[in-house]
Picture 1 (cartoon, rainbow, N blue to C red):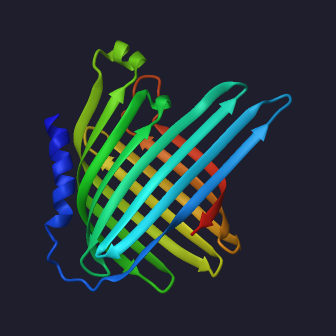
Picture 2: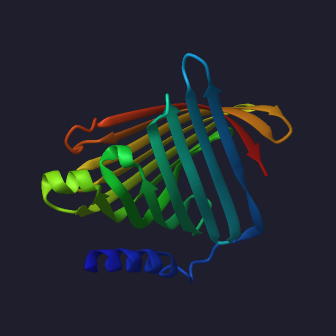
Length: 245
């Protein structure tokens, strides 16, 4: 438990260490995106697929907070073929328009990886590497901690219950406004410790009417050292409706 407590303490201390930094705050704002996609077929093939995501953002002075809830469920002929749930929170304390410190934590359940659940925590420094008229590129880096709880089958085979390690946490986030009604985003996240856990999401969003948009996304997850009989790479392709508020 000591590494876990240290990780939590790091998250709490990192933003407050810069509390006296001067930065001209903007107005308090709150908004977000609600995303939903579903597919159902009956007859010769019975399939069900549901993808949902809620992304909330809150800006208050120097602080920028983001809260994410995400779920994926797939069933094929009464057999569950995918089930993943994720909750994450990140707080940024901004020094200038280009630099900030961050603290983040995430909890994920994905039984098809051989783990009951995993959580990650990290804190560090972020910087806007590029700012153009219609695009930007942000980078984040810092130390973190990862804990993964094995499921009962893996525990029986391997003889231990969990895996944990300190990691180097890094994020690249690129956004491009293609036109007045469309946007391209690329996000890459990596945690490197005893192994490499990486996630890439590539998406294109096109406005339909008002606050309603259509989103096409490809998500790739990679684990450099998966458990026995588990593949190292997962891919996910989604077409969803996105409502911004």
